[in-house]
Image (cartoon, rainbow, N blue to C red):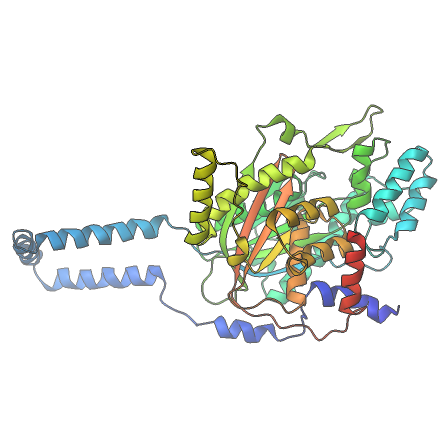
Length: 506
């Protein structure tokens, strides 16, 4: 396989061609300077001021009161009052409703040469550490071969070297390597400068240095002093959409602003050196990855790729089984790692159903909601022994981005949502090519859809994020442009990658 072909693998399957003239898209949506709310308000004040100074205030008020009395005591007073109430109602509705939030663009970390870690190398290096028992190594190797990951996933430089370097400095090096690649490309693509960023939200569950990741990024890009930054830690693989939720809420309260979101997980500092099977799975699945997303509430003067339709968060932390299903802890020998419960899939299924119920009420058509309610009434009140009705989300959703946490999770959600191979392809391809990249995985899947040329104007994309706590978060986006398929030649034919993904399913 040639080096030239290796360089194009992500571009073909995970990212649309950046060489296309993005400025053409921006010009299309740039309507120039339009009067803002402040200009309209100023205009009204000037008109009122002119009226008051041009006529005597007493005369103006007397005419107004006479007109008001005639209307109130006329036969049309009911019609007048109803209209006033409608106008007041619309006014308060406008004040309370959420303002639109858009994605300007997003980028993902695409790996670097020399960081690929084939399965056999992975297993061999773990064996050379001489700290794992033979049965642990055999279990680890079985997980590697069945996990649905390719030979091209990326491991951090600290873990690539021997002996492993899991120091804080090595972890910081991994962090900087990922965020500089993502954010540099995002600024270059959008034309936005670091000084224009008003809000910064970062999430990384298991690596929380001091100064924070936010502070590290602010220092690197020399962002303005007035920037508001938030660092989400310990919130698992679902934290990426929590960052989006927080960013969108911040944008509701400050017009004409930009919010930068950076989602990642750190592999270097969280390698497990023990022999507990329930904790060594993380070594087999997690890989280096990250994503940077630029949100804005600006309607004019900037292009938008997607608009946020709705976002729903579900937290089952009150349930002990759910709370302990993904647990960062020490094993009996004092080795720190992430414990994965045998009940994890049950917890996922329960939390997902709860999240889908809340989401369905917001996006499903009346016909699907009616079917669900009738089915619920028959089971609950008439005690009919029938299967619960599963609403058909495919009627309103064209693309699915499901957290690529592992083959088992994808299989379970595929069954619950009754998805086909095409709808599961972005998630399986992301797991296959990049492994479990934690909160960033749903953005790799987003990029996969763009790279295939499948994103059309008006399409809706459903991102499903799962994480410790236990949390299930959903975001639905609406595409505002069609993104053409890239002309970059793939590393191997499309049918070949599809066949390899299927082989890993079997």
